[in-house]
Length: 247
Image (tube, rainbow, N blue to C red; front, side, top):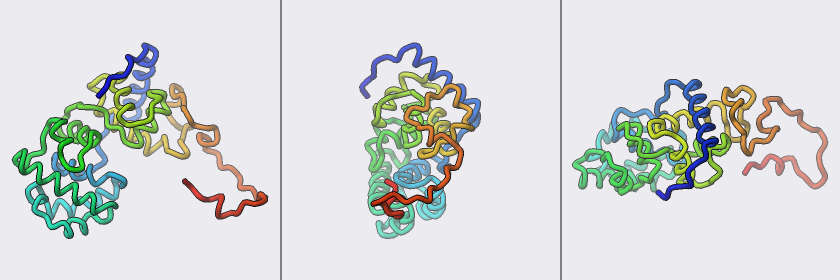
């Protein structure tokens, strides 16, 4: 990936403070996707696209029972595989990706999940984020920083990046964070994003990182834990149902 402009000393100092605060808040972290080996983690991560980890964890026990390794998955009937993973959404595309991935693993890697980034991203349905998840969590290899929706949101709110795409954000985080922290940083940001730094209504008042967090883009109304009273006055030209539409 193309390197960014070297960060300032002030930016590095802020990043170190964020890392220490996250370490204190979440000393023990692990991947939310239940798995027992690299194959299971790769499959679960592919399924997690546009789907919650909780839903994936409900789906994978039956999936792994039927297809315990890449060879069995590669020989699966598409319609049967689709039925097993239907609840994860986009099941037809995911089934195609899983079959392509498994076939490539069997043909090119003797059924073993590869340990190199370039080999992983050559598999069906595997992008850089998925490859980083597998290398970091399954093999302990810090190949990059996993940037999912939580990491993307928190990195900007915490002032660790001003950029928008996952690739750009990963470049900025790699420049700020020591390589030894890349794997756990993602896990900690994801956990913090699920428990405290929520997307629409972050719990800033109870957040242990509040003293050092610039809360970029967070409005006072969002960060307040107080319940706002509902107005009984209807505005002209507005309907109640229309005002509840979320985008």
